[in-house]
Length: 90
Image (spheres, rainbow, N blue to C red):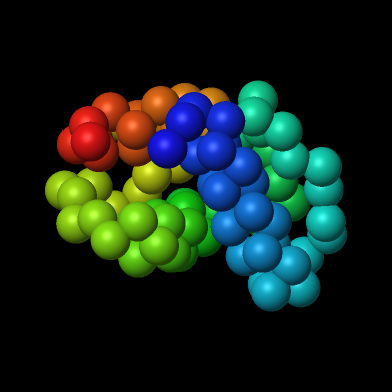
C-alpha cells in the first residue's frame, strides 16, 4: 500500500465516523489533524478510526489511537506514515 492509498483510506474512515456521529461535514485533506481540526471529533473517535483501519488491514499493533502520538494530534499524512512504518514489507 502506498502513502497516498493509506491517506485516502484514513480520510474515508475519518469522514465516515464524522458523518455517522451526526456532526458537521468538513473537507479533510492530508494536512488535516482530525482530533483538532474537525468539529466534535475527539480522541475516542480516533480510537474508532484505529479499530476500523486495523480491521481492514488485518493488523494487531500496540497502540490504540492512530491519530495521536505522545499526546500530539497527528495529520492524516503523519498517521499514514506511522501506520505504514508498522506494516511488514511484502
